[in-house]
Figure (cartoon, rainbow, N blue to C red):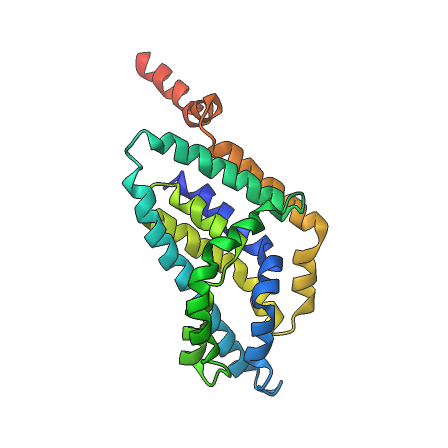
Length: 238
């Protein structure tokens, strides 16, 4: 569990700071969800936004579980080390993306275009949203929209070699995207502007890159893991 905690934190940061990218993918839909609702019905607007984002996050977790099964299948094989290196490189790449230093991750969006062609007509039929069940289902379908950041996070989560961990990481990532999308739907411009500030994005990107370096196999891992073990051995010998 102690090894999973920094990964969960990293997934949250990815979602939180990747929210700017999510605005380009879902921002228009956030407006469509609430456009027809009078400003005085703020509670209803919030319910629809929460239901939509819950459905979207659950679809991320489901995808994490499914692709995590593929990672689990090779976790005990010699490819496990390759998966761990791959995970570290993906984290570093995502950190570069969040900091605005490299946008190559958007190229992986092409992987899901075929699937989305079948899902999009179903999602379109749910508009306009008339209630919470519709919003929940719309979010569950919209969660499969081709997105480089989501797909990269999926591949990273699968490289953990545990289906449940992959699902939890995708759940954490999805929860991290909530503040920006909820703020957009509720017209909370201050929070959105804060998360879009370059300094905040760069700091978050560097943090994710540090997690990537921590994940990379090497002597530094043995030092970090065994840093507190030497004193205990010394006491036992005495």
